[in-house]
Length: 160
Image 1: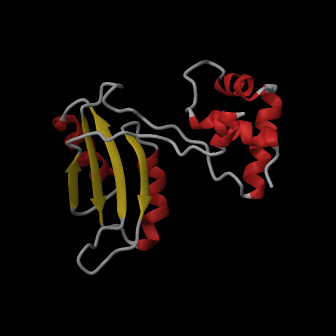
Image 2: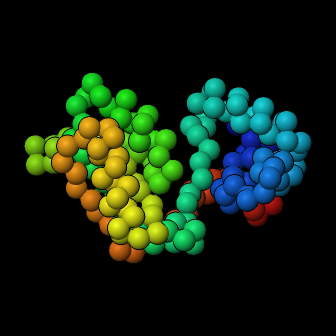
């Protein structure tokens, strides 16, 4: 069961991580506590399974990245961890993950690339393929950016 202070933290996180040298200090102020208490409570919520992760959403177009591509590959199961670790270190990759395959869709490794042009995206994807000894790749470019919004929890506190 979350305490009132934990609920304030969850509400503060729903507005995003502030772009500041001390984002957790700013979140702590918003939640009405000290930074060390906020960090301690976040660790506790994670240990208890009440919080899976704290993440940031890249507004890629606002950041200057006009070419955004989802690349998919067929990676042998025994190489998924190795490839995932290598690809996740790429500056152009915001996230990568594996999925189950289907008979009509044999791709099991996905990576989202962000670049300033389609050519730059293709060059990065080609280099990733070569350096990691990956085979056939399919690339899907974003044509529209949809609204990105965080889930909002404990909104009833707004009314108090």
